[in-house]
Image 1 (cartoon, rainbow, N blue to C red):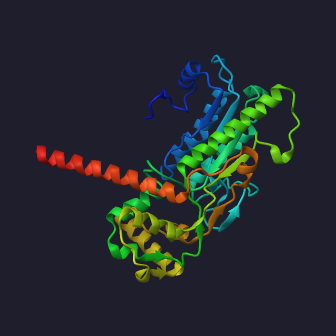
Image 2: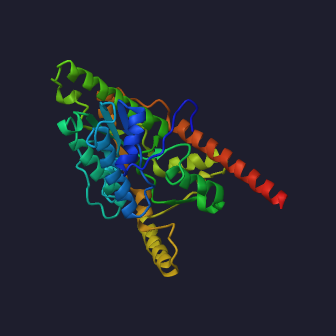
Image 3: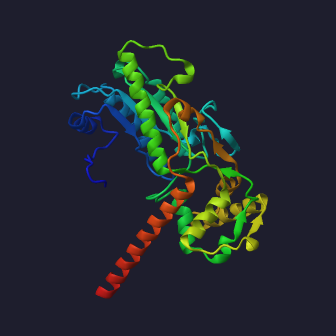
Length: 339
């Protein structure tokens, strides 16, 4: 928790509990960042990402009654994966790509796509108090505190994997992969909120003419670090920063088709043993695919630009992980001593 901030607990799928919070805070702006981990069961993803977003949106817009204020702007945190089918390469993809609403491979992405669609459809609606909305789509969030995503997985490998494993590479490493530092994502959300409030102010003044290339409300914006990196370069940067020695001459690249075959064998073994597989065909696909995005739109319309480089963001993540690791080891040592 951050000093100077006030925190309230509420279930975002429960309108009565949300009304209690809104009546105390009376926000002008809501930035919705609530989302479960990507690998949780589909019913949980649907409840939080879709139903929770709908309820929060409707409470903010006054559908459940007067909570003593008026929310002018609603910024929804979506995901760059809403335009990805989890198979095809994406190279400098932008907001003109269609939403993938029925992604059987990635229920998380599908629920985020449905949620974004319902949010943008609610823009400037009379029944929601003419609240203005937009969606921000982060691409590959990394940074401190990540306990389930790319950062954690790569750092866990750095702390646990044998040296030979760090010198294995799935695929040719000729694919760019987009990572975005969490602090830049937060800044992008604030830029979008400011732009929405400015639009609301203009509407209040009767200035309703907005050119297409200026429009913010009802729009989606991809936010990135604008620094796509080869997938394995990013991983090896983190491993080296953690303190593991990587000898470039010893790195062995396995062809993608070989890795996919190994992934199938691993999945089969996992199915037979009842334990989830770490190496799957989908994880191989992610390691080898192109997945880069353009953040030109949010830069042009909301004034966003990255404030922290991806290198600095990853170094911050490594520093926090090692601090937490040291604290955990100290705690275990004290517990062992007390026994």
